[in-house]
Image (cartoon, rainbow, N blue to C red; front, side, top):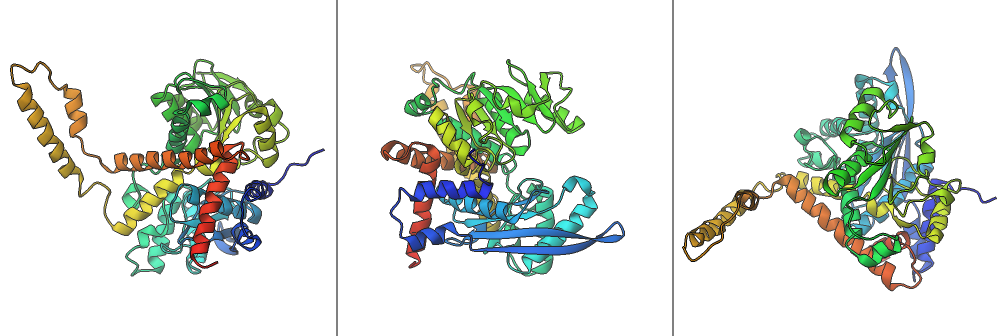
Length: 474
């Protein structure tokens, strides 16, 4: 019986499939493959009258560009293999979407639900202290971000800890991304990964040839979608696809089961229900199914795994009925399942592209912090003034009795509005997702040996990393 590879083994298998199609020297191939360094820290914090010891990791996969970039996750399943695999994915992801970072990742073995807010702050600050003093958090060397179990709150604590230890660093705010707006963050960061999933699907649906490979046609409007995991990423992807693109979210899978509605679930109400009750059970807008994993095998057009790695594996891959899968989570499809699904004709939009919205907008936040100015602050009113000049001239012309047209109030209002930070962030993200898809697509359609988007993504990424190392003289 075929055994299931671990998450790290899956990443290595995908890497091997790609480099087999490339002309890399063995030395350069090995340099790109290996993880440069992993720091393991065990630290104690006095909590509830005794000392609790925690284990954390920060892994640096590649420094072909610096700083290195990658999230910090808080979860009981965190281990060195997982962190190193995620760091490798970050290297390839950053190369694919052309953000100027190497790959890194961090994790702390902890269940955040077991500790109150004050205790979590003490633990987070001590973990940050251990990393900061070794330059494993630094605006020019290593820039973390939120991941599973962390968010704006933890990033604000880490930033403050860095400031306390580096009181004269004018760029201190750039030591992490994913901060709250009033703590140096950027508008659009919280929604970024989910928004990126939406933009990725929109780009895919622009190409008739690509839709045909997934046995689909038309637009996103009316497409049936199943979302696994309604956390930050799954929620925003589901919200934007249903509200802006007309998709029907026919099922949502959570820890306690799944809820189905063939007419489409009301995502906002479901999110509120989960926040109140901790799960989907009891939601009045759909039918509850206790065995959530089985719902992955329901018929749909698009399946969005947006939670943990390895949810689609050798045990269920043959039963998947989705026409396409977009990996909003990291590594939700194992290497073995990937092989099965490709043979079945299921199109997979790979994680290193599909969930790159987070690191893309993190890049914008980092640039904003280094520039010490909000995007749009200098140019917005000048842009509006130029638009006003044009409208004034058109209004003057429309007063001519020979001209029968007039400008609608809605057009004038929209045209006159200059782009603020959120609009510029979304524009930059949309452009990034479009260009990155096109770079994968070109390989997918022009290389006879490339039969899926994942290998195409790896080929694009590894080529860029290799070019970077060669430019350094390696």
